[in-house]
Image 1: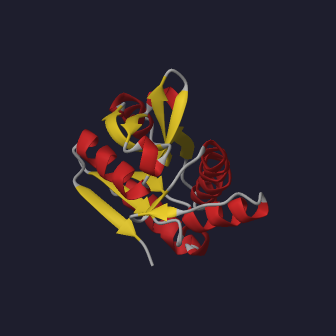
Image 2: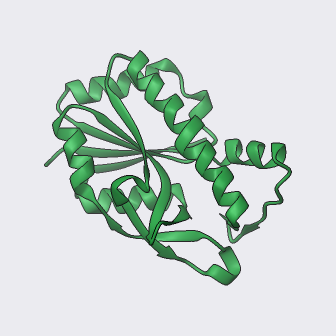
Length: 180
């Protein structure tokens, strides 16, 4: 499959994206390109952790992820942020489906460093068949970077790294980073 464009939306930008952004992605699809969106959600995760009174720390730019932090991150990424992006695409007149890397073991990961970073993963494998299914059916996949670690375990994955892994697996024509 050619003309695949991976679009990574940074967590600091997802709430500020104008309707014109989603309309331009819909137009890209109409021109024969196949957009796939991977998103972060750092600020929204920070807000949720504050509301839940859960301590959070960063090590070398990565959020140290405890069980509690992972649960909050998954709620925000797979729930609020992912579904808001899907709704914005649908408002722009194009079909999108939201999923996390856990769904269908879309993203399989292994821990980066359990002792230092906790439940932070590095993507080892992408189940591109799932993404290709949606592309072939004219639907934009919107992916939250929570990955399967096997045996029902989950890992938090840096969205930039998740987007790069998806781009490699799909042999994407482009990888675009939308950031502030």
